[in-house]
Amino acid sequence: MALEARSDKTDIPPIGFVIGIALIAVAFYVCFLLGAFIVRFIGDAGIDAIRRIFGLLVMAIGVEMVVHGINEHEALLALIG
Image (cartoon, one colour):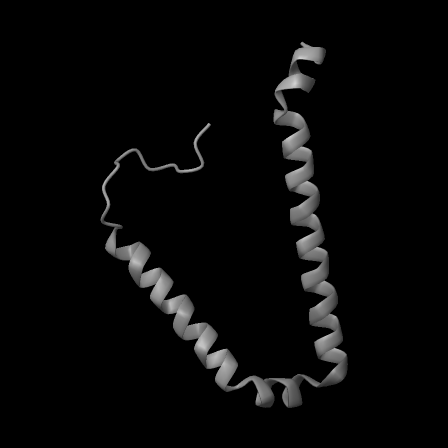
């Protein structure tokens, strides 16, 4: 199974893809510029809450990747089926 859903194999990415990457880059730049203000505004408790939420999200992504890897492993599929 391919990791890419597009069927066309051109070297030129669609304009929406390029615009999306540019918008994300600008959003990160603004967050870095306003980082000190955001930290003061949110406070220590807010930073701790955000840290815990992002830790939970990263853990959930990791668990999903492990489960997907186990489900798609060829040797395990041969044993089961």
